[in-house]
Image 1 (tube, helix red, strand yellow):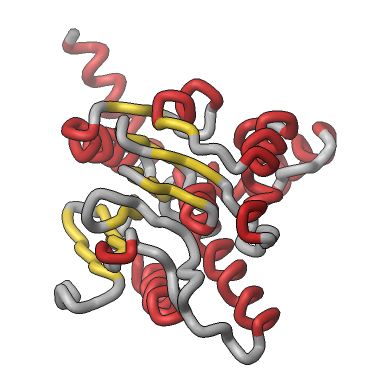
Image 2: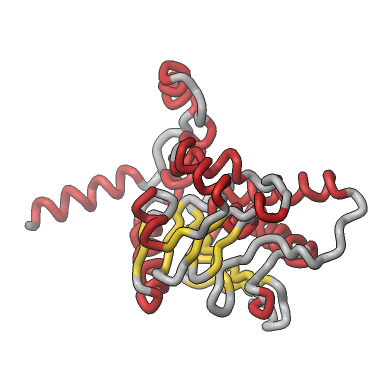
Length: 253
């Protein structure tokens, strides 16, 4: 457990690692220090996450993340640092563990890119999703132009990117940007419910299913089918035991 002064608060319990962006006075806007802290936790999960089955990303206070902190000093190697940030979010996506973004309040621009790097987005009704790069004369650098169309389709992604307008949690769920939208007071319970469902399945299968989907993104169907057949990691060691337990439950019902 890290201290309350940290830019990333971490809690590991019951197979769930929760990482909380912790700049509530800035609506959790991301500066270099926060990104470095976030990257350190991702590297630790990669190296030592054998007892972690799900990762949850959320923001402290009433907001998920307002994006990049535009008041922070620019890095002397702007392109190199931007690449490091982009690669950090790619590492988040490629974690073996399923990743859930729990979104309340602002989820703008860079914050939206954080959320899009997760496998699931669960929104509270207070959530507001927007890409405001265009308002500031900026363009995406953390993956939004690639991940957003893959999640909501090209036409809707262009609408979001070119209008810079906010969308509610309900609207996000309707368009497929969010997997679920629930009242804010039910958000934590919904996240816990989803964590429990995912944790009950084979962690090996969860990791390999993620890998197969992401590794074959953009493949022609025939190439993807061949990849699934030839590059899958095989059954979990627990498969036989799971089958026996299922058969026993069926026999006793």
